[in-house]
Image 1 (cartoon, rainbow, N blue to C red):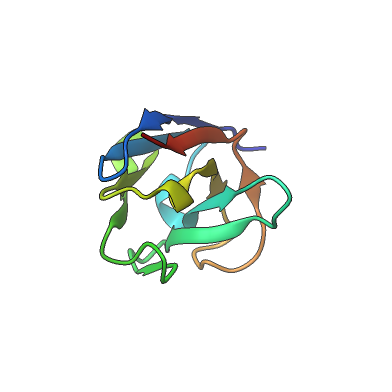
Image 2: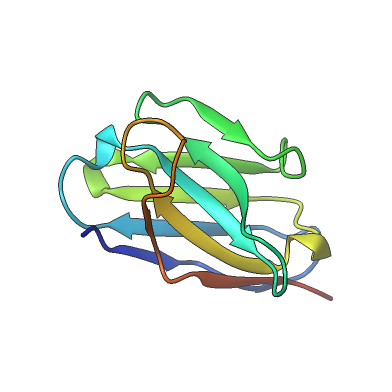
Length: 119
């Protein structure tokens, strides 16, 4: 079972930036699709961005042009660079490793990390 450990969350003012990181245990990190999701209390978890094993990316419409997902395969690390943050970006963010190279399916989850955008 892979372990995913997120870091980099916190409190930031509107318009600010944060960078989340997710370190994955195990081998073959480069093969798997990797994604970031977020969840607000009382709502379903939503996909923020995904990066396939072939380095293709897709983003939720609400974050396009502001967020960037990328990975460092040598360090088994997935990143989410978040710019021009808005209060509606406030959520718990989860790292997710898929079971194959695509962005489909469930897979494994990190414990989640809080991001709060507030003045």
